[in-house]
Length: 632
Image (cartoon, rainbow, N blue to C red; front, side, top):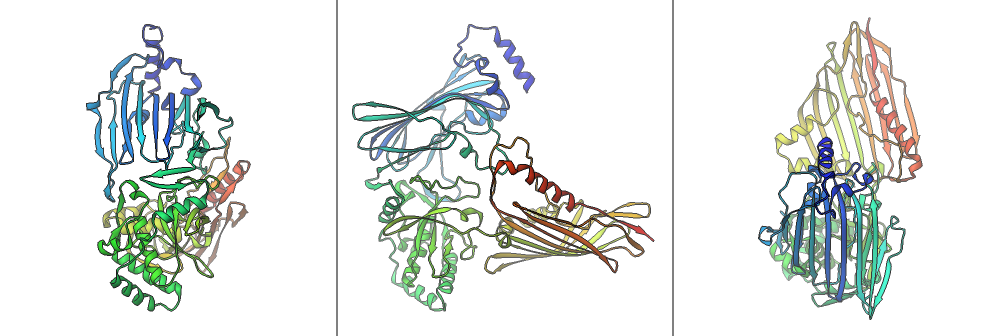
C-alpha cells in the first residue's frame, strides 16, 4: 500500500493544471507519518442565539490515505426533536485536488438511530459515503445544524484518532453578553483563545496547526485527554421551556431535581407491597436488599429518549404499571419504593462505561450518560444499579465504580465518589490437584473462585453465551497448549461481592516435554501472566485502573520412579505497582507450587516505566519457569 501511494504521488507531482487546495503532495511529510488520514482543514462555529437555541456549523476536509482511513470519510450526522439539520454539502477530490463528485441530497441515507435496547427514541441519522477506492482521496463536508436547546454545548477535539494528523483546525463560539459561555481547555492547549467583540456579542476562537499523530501508549489515560480539547458550557440555559443555571454543581443538581420533582408517587397497591417487603427485613440494609430484588424481578430496562425525556423521568406509577423503564425511570422507581419504606436515597448522575473519560470536577456541565441510586447509611453507603437484573446491592463493577458522580438533592448537586474495589476484593483463587504421566500428559482437578471485577467477564459469558460458545471460551482460557475441559460446573454466589465458583477437570496433552530420561515441566500450571509493558520513550503518566489479586495453589504428583533434578528458584518482588511471589516445594512425589500476584491501581510517573516493564518481565519469566525431573 505504501508503494502504491508513492507511485500515485509521482504520477501527479508534475501535473499543475489541477486545483492545489487539497493536493495531497502539499501535506508536510511529518503529517503523513504513521497515519491513515489527514485533516486538512476544519472550521467549527457555535453561534448562541438565545438561552434555548444555537447554530452549529462544521466545515471540514479530510484526506484519506488508505482503506484504514475510510471511516473518517463517512458522513454520520444524528438529529432529533432538539437537533435539526439545516444543510449538508459535500465534495470528493482526487489525490491532486481535482473535484470528482458533488454530494447530492437524494444520495444521503436517512435511517433510524434506534438502538437494540431503545423502546422509544426520536434519534435518526443522516449517513453518506462517497464510493471510491482510489487512494489517496479527499472529502470535504459542510454541516449546519440548529439546536433547540441550550443545555448541551459541543466540545472540540480536532484530532479524532491516533491514526489522524491535522494540518489546520479552528473552533469558535459567539455569544451575546447576557448569555456568557464558560470554557475549559486541557493541558495540551497552551494558548488563550483570540477574543473579539462586535456590538453586544463576544467571539472566542481557538486554532491549532500541524498536529502530528500521537500513538496511544499502554496504560494511558484516554486519547481525548492527551489531545487538544476545548469544553464549553452555558451559565443560563433553556430546554423545552425548562430553564436552569449551570454555573455550579449545586445549581445544576437543583435543575435536575426540579425537572423530576413529584414523579415519585406510587399506586396504593404498590405501596402496600413495598411495606410488606420492607417488613421482612430487620435492618435498613436488609430492607434495601429485599426491595432491590423486587425491582429486579418485576421490571426490565428499556431506554426511552424523546426530547427532554432524555433527562425527565417517567413517573413511578408509569413504571409500576408498565414494568419497564430507562435508567432514570427505574432509579426513580427504586427511590420511590425506598421512600415509602422510610429509607432516604438520592439520584446520582454518572458517566458510565469501563473506558470513559473521567468527570471534570472543576467544570460544571453536562458530562453524564447514566443514572444510579445512592442510599446513604450511618456506617456505609449503598449503591444500586437499577437497570441490572443480576447485580447484587452495592456492587458497581467497572461500569460505574471508582469515579466522581453528582448527587441530586433538594438543596442542589453535590460531587461524591463511587467506591473503588481493593485488590483483595477483585480476587481469583485457584486450587488444582494434578497427576503427571510419564508420557508428559496430565490430568487435573481444578476449583476457581472469582470475585468482584474478576468475575464480571465470566458472568457475562455464562448469562449471554450459548453453551457451544461458552465451551469454546473455556478451551481458549488457559495458556497450556492442547487441553480439554470436562465436568464443568459453576455456581454464582452472593456474598459481600458477587462470586463465581467453578469446578472442572482438565486433560492436558504433552504438559511435560520428554528428553531421554528427563521430563521438563512448568509447575505453575494455570496462571501464566500475559501482563506486558514497553517503557521505551514513555511520555505519559502510567494509569492502572483496576487493582486485583491472584492466589494459586497447585499440587502436581510426578510419575513413579522420577525425582527432582532442578527446581525453579523462588521469586519474591515488591514494587509500587504491586507484589509477586512464587515458590515450589517437593515432598513425597508431589510438587506444591504457591503463587500470589497483587496489582495496585493508581497513577504513576512516566519515569517509573522501566520499573513496571521489569516487574512484568520478571513475572512472565517466573510463571513459566521449568523444573527438571529425572528417572532414577
